[in-house]
Image (cartoon, rainbow, N blue to C red):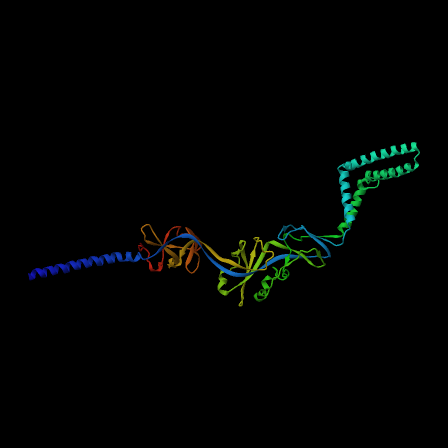
Length: 420
């Protein structure tokens, strides 16, 4: 009995030993696999990284302020915001009052010239016919009065006949414009036009651009020529109060309108030191205006201990640029586009930046990447292929592709490790 008990204990120990060895083997075999199952992965997809700054911008325009050289009544021929060519008539100033008779005479002369040229002198034919009929009736009445020896009636009829004949002369042309030849009419037309034109000053646009009747007094202060010398504290003191120039009468040296170059305009702003790295000369940025996005180029960067000035150059039209001086805008300073990955996927191996991509068997394989940009959480990388210089040669490097599965927390992974 005692021997059977010892033999049974020995078997149990042996069984426990072998079971422990099996468990240990399985742990050694599958622990890395189990550990790898806790690792996250992500799918490489297209995305963007944007860095947006809220900036106070001052608009600088190439603009011409036109003033009146005379006093008088004014009439406008261009609308606010209208784009005009050089030489376009914007307004007319009437220096002296030209009497109504002179203008009416010119209208009649012009009409008679047109009538002669188009052989339309029969316009008064109906009046002529009626007068001829009246004259015949008066002559008949005179003859009848002679037979009756009614001298008083004859005298009265002769006066009526004289009036009718005088009217006939006026209509037929002996005493009117119609009776003058075309050359005489043209000479009179020229004299009347000179008289009227001498009293009118035509204001034309000196350049092509946008017409505006709104000014704020800074047209000669904030210019492309002096914008790089402006200091931030002086700009902050600007109080842009817009004045509407449109009126009925003007005096000498009074501003009439301005013409704004619509092809190129500028904005200036100031950024902090930690923002400066996102603003490099020649780089394109995007402004979010209320009416839509506008792209501009960083024209100048002027660094200073106090404030760093950024000058933007814009060649895109915006509906409010010609009459706005200061505006707060969101500016997209950085806009990277490409495959978007988590930042913790990026590692460095043998001096090269890259990520681990899972192959068909879910083994981690190192792939070099070209980082286009990054923020606190993500990176944007080139997809498919990129180029790098190796010695004197430019070498094509195969990199990750769209929808590749990328390992996260890559610093804790070894190449060739299986990830579940």
